[in-house]
Length: 135
Image (tube, rainbow, N blue to C red; front, side, top):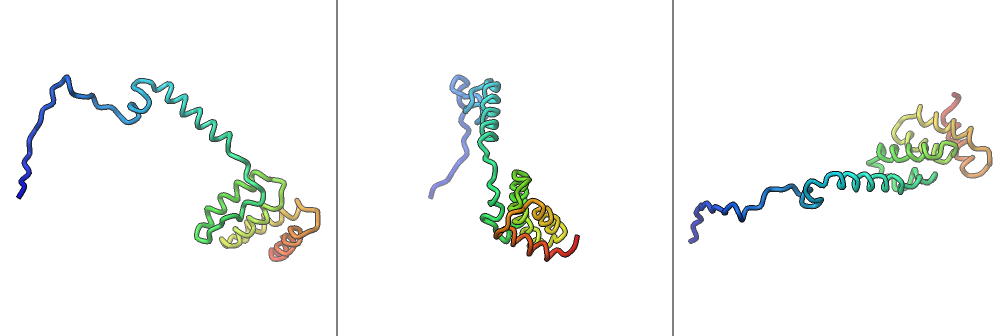
């Protein structure tokens, strides 16, 4: 049977290491100016590298259990493409699934003013516009 006992060990002062934070160990003590500059540079680099979302990306990878998050992503797409009917048409679907008919119909009415060329998108917008009734 092994019995554990408590014992205090005293380390001589000349062998003790002063306590430092992980950041200090990684960045070097007292070198906060450089650390801040590196952090700011990385932040700027990340913001510059973010691409404008594609106009047809509103409904990509939509999870029915995460519709509010899909709507947030789609809001960014609509903001990035203010004169494109496709994101508004797609956001109509999300608003409809979230049972917000007022917002859905507002989007599809705006989409109808932006599209002039007949085709599949034009037909989709017309059908959805009919579902909204008169303004």
